[in-house]
Length: 309
Image (cartoon, rainbow, N blue to C red; front, side, top):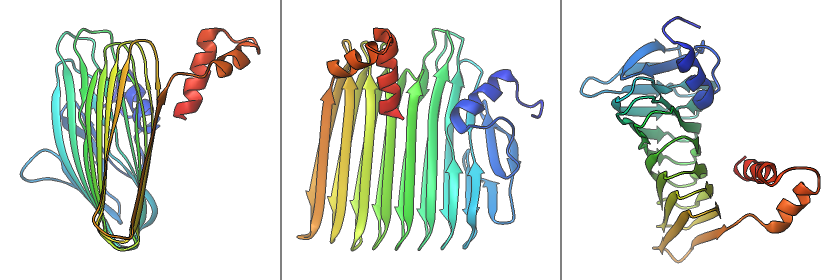
């Protein structure tokens, strides 16, 4: 890997983007508030915004089975970084977008990244978007991540979002808003773990505007110690459509979890469902694994890893 990235940077890239080196394809790597590596390809152009920090990513129509990586690294204590990224996924294309932010903070000042991402998925296009958040460091400064994701899916387009936050983030406020045109399809998978005194808030609002649009949200979370989680889900059915939200949480120790649904049907053929379950680890699961030789801690860890997988 190029010497523009040190050992800590490489570790963060592996955690948030499964990268062991700078990718050969389209990418934009941002470190401590500035770009350090960028490559465009014939089908995927990346260019800087003229009026504010961030990039425009343009995927040409008909682009198939290509990917673009846009990870962000904060390895200096006390950094506050805000970016505005816009993506146009061209008509009839099929692409993977890998984002995410990793924070390493060993200082006494807070480190924070706010990423505002806007996507336009054109007609008959398919986009898979993976966003992973990870933080580490023994400093007293907090690790803060506040992502905003806005997606507009045109006719018969498909958007698949995988939103993951597993370790180390002290505070997060996640905002996700999606609008779907006729025949458009959305799948969101959310996985989140908090521990200690961490707090996490996630708000997902989906507008099913077009006829026969569909949306499915699967949210799984684990709250440990004294951490707090709040989930707000909104489905607005404005045409003949189908929407389904499933929110499952495991609560442990002295943690607190809230799931707040809001379903609004504005059409007689809108079918909207919200399911939520909050509970502790089942005792029989622990006993079964402990009977196989695992300690209680090992059994709990195995169950949680499977739940969040």
